[in-house]
Image (cartoon, rainbow, N blue to C red; front, side, top):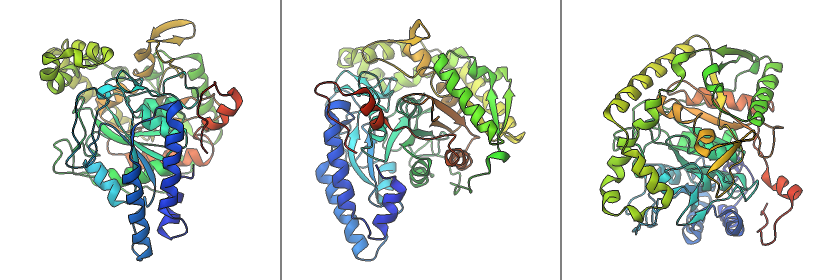
Amino acid sequence: MTPGTEIAAQVRTGRLQALDVVTEALERAAASQGTLNAFTLIDEEGALARARGIDRLVADGRDPGPLAGVPVGLKDLIDQTGLPNTKGAGFPTSPAEHSATVVRRLGAAGAVIIGRTGLHEFAFGFTSENHWFGPVRNPWDPDTSPGGSSGGSGAAVAAGVVPVAIGTDTGGSVRVPAALCGVFGLKVTHGRVPLTGVYPLAPSLDTVGPIAATVADLAACYLVIAGDDPEDPWSQPVPVEALPPPPDPSTLRLGVVKQWFALPHTREVAAGLDHFLHTAGNLGVDIVEVDEPHLTEDAAAARAFGPQVVAVHGERFSADPDAYGPDTRVRIADAYAGTVEDLMAAIRWRAQARAVIGRLFTSGIDVLIAPTVGGMRKVIGDEQMDLDGESVPHRTLLASFTAPINQIGAPSLAAPIPGTGTPPVSVQLIGPMWGEARLLATASALEACGVLASGEPEKYFGKRGRRSGDVPHVP
C-alpha cells in the first residue's frame, strides 16, 4: 500500500486519480474481509462519490486538502452522517444525523472513508472478538487477535487495505491493535482530539487517534483531526503545533521507567525492547534508567473508571443485560464494584504521576519508554495468554502497559521494532502533556534510521502458507 502522504501529494497535483486509489482500496477491503473481518460496513457508494468529488476539485484547480484521496478506515464507534453507528453491539441503530467532528475534519482535508471498522463491543475490551459481528483477525496470523478495541482499524492498516485508520483509546485501544498488528498507533493527550460524535466508554479517559503504517501518515492524520472543539466539554484550547524537524538521534535522551518494565511481559517482548535500546544506543541516543515509585499505578485506578461505565450503560444494562454480549455483560457488571474511594485514590495518583513525568521531561528527558504490550500472541477464543509457559488472563499482558498512560492523560505512541519477530515487538514512547509534535518528531527520527519500522504481514503470509479457504492478501 502506498503511504497516504504520497497518495495525497499525487492526487493534489493530478498525477493520480482519487477514484482509482479509492476503487483499489475498496477491492482490497472486500477481498480481505473473508479472512480478516476488519469491517462492519464497506461504504462503496459513498466512498466512490467522495473520490469523484475530489477529482473534480483538482480538475478545477482547487486543493482538496492534505489528505486528498487517502483511503481511511473509521472505527464503528464514531458517527458518520447517513450510516449506522453500531458501536460493535447488537442493539438496533439508526443512521447518524450528523458526523463527528473528527469525520468532518477528515472530509475537509480530502480523506475518503471507505468503511467502518470492527471493534470490541462498545469498545469495552482488548481482543475485538465480537459476539455480534464475529472476531476481527490478525493479518499476521488469522488464528490470533489483532488486539482491541480498535482491532479492525489495526488489521486494515497492517494488511495494506488502507494506509490510515481511526480508532479510539481509553485504556490502550489504539496502541494495543497497533502493537499486535505491527504498525504505528498514536494515543493523544486527553482533550487534544474532539470526542463530539464519538460514543463514550469512560469520557475522562477516552481519546481518538490514528493507526498508520508510517510515522508520516500518523502525523498527517493527527494534524488534521487535532484541535479545540467548543462543542466537546473535554476539549482544551491548546494550540496544535507543527512538527519540528526530526532531531539528530545523538541528541535524544530516552528514559526507561523501571516500574513499567517490572510489569509482566514475555521473554520475546523483553528481548525486543533490549534490541530497541541497543540499536538506539549505537546511534548515540542517551538512555537513562528512571526509578520513580510513584509511576506504579494505584490499584484503585483500574477500578475507578467503573462509575463512568455505569453512567453510560447503567440504565440500558439494568433494563436488559442479556442484550449485551457475554464478555461485555460481565465487564459492565464488574464496573459496579468501583467506589467513590477508588475514584478519589485514582484522582490523587493521576495528579501525582502527571507531576512526576512533567518533572522528568523538564529535566532533559525527551521520551519515556515502556513496552506497549506484554505478549504478542492472543489466540482467538482463548481468554488466557502464554507468559513463558504460564497461563495468564489476556488483559494482564494487553492492558497493563497502556492503561496507566490513559489515567495520566499524556500522549503515547506504539511503534514496531524491526527484526524482533512476526509481528515485531512494539515499544511505547510516552511524551509530555500536549507534546504530540515532539513525540512524533522523535519517532520519525528513529524510523528514518531504522530503529523503528512498520511490519509487512503479506510477506509473512507467503512464508507460513495459507489455510484452505483463506482469502489472499491483495497488494
